[in-house]
Amino acid sequence: MDRQTISRLAHAHHPIAAPVTDESVARLLARATAHTEAGRALDLGCGEAGWLIRALAAHPRWQAVGVDLDAAALTRARETAEAVGVERRLGLHHLEAAEFSAREPFDLVLSIGATHAFGGLLPTLAAAREHLAPGGQVLVGEAFWEREPTAAVLDGLGAARDDFADLATTTDRVIADGWTPVYGYVSSLQEWDDYEFSWTGSLARWALDHPDHPDAAAAREAADRHRAEWLHGYRGTLGFVTLLLRR
Image 1 (tube, rainbow, N blue to C red):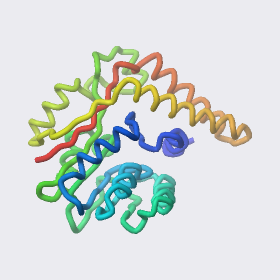
Image 2: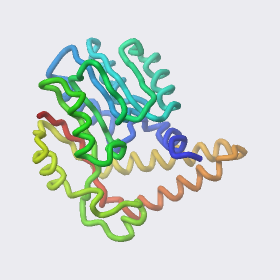
Image 3: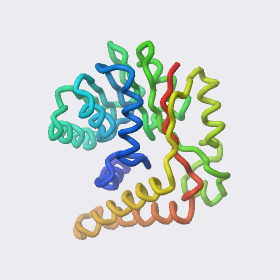
């Protein structure tokens, strides 16, 4: 079973692919869109476009574009947009986020939990800057170390110590790169727990509901492995921050 399919099944009951509740998403989007009644938003690595669809539903004069490599996720995004009634204001592109280009700049560029597509946080911000209109904002979500990771944590994540920094260092690097944080939100441990139990539970539920599917065993194995890596590894060590930035 490929990673995109696993992710799609795992996010069935938590479409925002980050440890952030619907209430937190709404608050972040309210801050990010408050500077203009009519604007354009771009999500680099949008998945099922949960952030964009919520923004469009709340702001009838906004338009949005989402970019992602997962064709099935984009199909789900179109279906959700149609159900909400915002499909005419949402454009979706199936390609590498780094390859996307547009004729007009955007008032808001998002990349939440998708910085790996550009090779890290600062390269993601560099890419976002290329799409940003004067006075526009970037909403970026990135992991950080809540505490020093052990070797077991790094092994479980398949990560290196330098893949992330602590919150202060992460913020300092963003500021040194020419950005000013105008808002930020650190996901709580409760949000992490809800996200991880939903992720592993949705995947395990699918495996139980489809015992004869050729991928059922692989799905169950992926859920069990992820749950163990979280509970016995990075729980309380890996944090997540969503920053609203301006130049």
